[in-house]
Length: 234
Image (cartoon, rainbow, N blue to C red; front, side, top):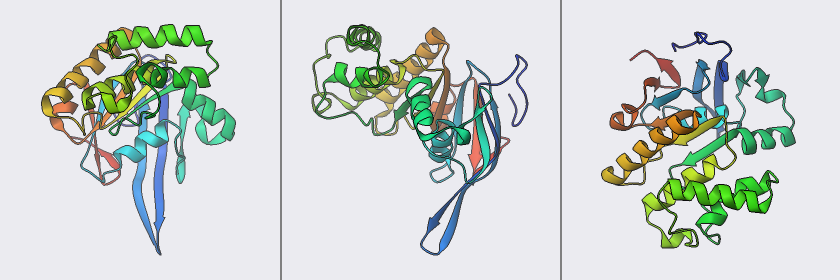
């Protein structure tokens, strides 16, 4: 997939056209993204590599509907995200997208299983089905023995595994991982990236990993380079 090129197997899952994002800081406008064009095929696994401040997190947030562009637009299966109501956009994020963050963002008062099941419960999945899915996912990521442990009782790597299971609970079409190894040592980070690759192959979910680390990016079949808010050729 090249920048702005249509995939050979039909309409892409996600399309970005002329996407810019500008933030107001005091009296200054900070332009973070500067005209991004992308076509992301269904089932792709790609890395979005760039230095800190290049706009990686901002682009992931826009692709996942956590924020909207200043200009340009993003389509998911042909539907423009900026044309969805607030409620429809929230439902889209809950059901169609799984998010994995550098800081895990687990709820401290919930145990591992409850954290994983939270998005399913928001999607009104019956409690028994949600629990069954959550247990299966935690078993798959190697935490079947940690179901009742709260985040403070888990290592960083274990917390990220819980976050990965949570991202998959609603069987999303798109998983967005923002610096998923950023808070981990190199050995644990390598385990997490290997796990993401395995789960991508098993679930056929479209996976985008944003990272500054070339070693992490090298695990993806395709790497997009983001420099000063633009996708550039390597």
